[in-house]
Image (cartoon, rainbow, N blue to C red; front, side, top):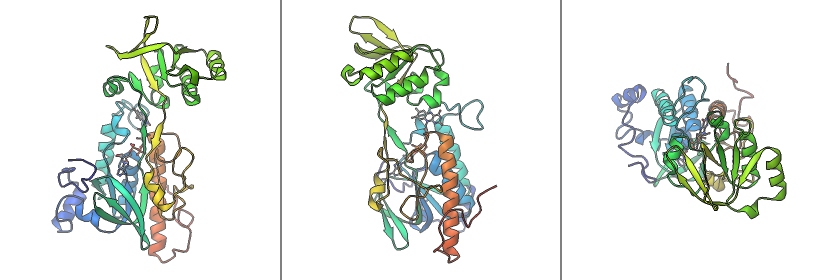
Length: 351
Ligand SMILES: Cc1cc2nc3c(=O)[nH]c(=O)nc-3n(C[C@H](O)[C@H](O)[C@H](O)COP(=O)(O)OP(=O)(O)OC[C@H]3O[C@@H](n4cnc5c(N)ncnc54)[C@H](O)[C@@H]3O)c2cc1C
């Protein structure tokens, strides 16, 4: 089971990496994979094992830190049918395959990844305790890498259409693949209009699919017209056809779209931040400094949960920065210079 309260789950991730096998043989990790490690004090507990959390876990494990990542198993990356802008994969790679590779790489160096849904974080002594399925997990530092959840439109067969790229959520990710297609942008606010304008550089046929015509201001209509964007506001229904979505208009006409972009925004998964008064922006993103540290000392954040371009390359860069800062911070503490500021001022900054 990979449910929300399954932390840690003895059946989870049967692949055992070399590092863990060695520990098992030495009798250091009796019981299910990751269980004992998760209950011991981790140098860093990573909440969320998507690309950001996994790369941070890899870095920390390679810094020889005891790192545990808890993961609810429902990240955005898992739904990417094919990534064509991921560094190092000229033929593309699915999001699931990338996550799987990152997971293998992190566990290979000794990171423990356990399934579960973290429901609370709190300070405990000089560190933290994370509540996860009733099991309190202690850690010296925390990294929040919990991502965001997209708001999806009320359209039929969403999963299937995302898989075949008839429904897309991110023009930066796959505008290229929409080149020359008839594109519908589902939404009517300023954000939807911005997406439509962005997509105009890939196609001459871009339409705003408006559900509430009253919500589209005259200024937005003028801006759309100037950018060569059509407005479909007399939609009766949208159904899923053989090769994508088809909108049926009130007058009976049908318009087939090569791709529809949902421009409905997302919810930031940062509820945990409230407990430590971690500052967030007006959309709910966690605010961080240049080392990815939040205003709560010892708590870092990386990936989509932080305001940034929601892209894997960005999430990975933030994760590398956060992991290095956490390691340097712990080194200072271990060396008894905890009065010094964390981050890289007194540490190395990389090659
Ligand atoms: C359809 C689609 C296509 C995309 N295509 C591209 C693309 O082509 N290129 C690109 O660069 N980006 C693409 N993206 C964006 C990309 O998926 C994200 O930028 C990336 O996944 C961010 O990584 P992350 O680790 O921050 O978050 P996520 O991948 O969302 O991972 C967050 C993890 O945290 C876990 N989690 C959340 N809350 C908790 C909790 N309380 N306790 C435990 N675990 C928790 C989740 O289960 C999840 O595993 C696409 C996104 C979508 C939806």
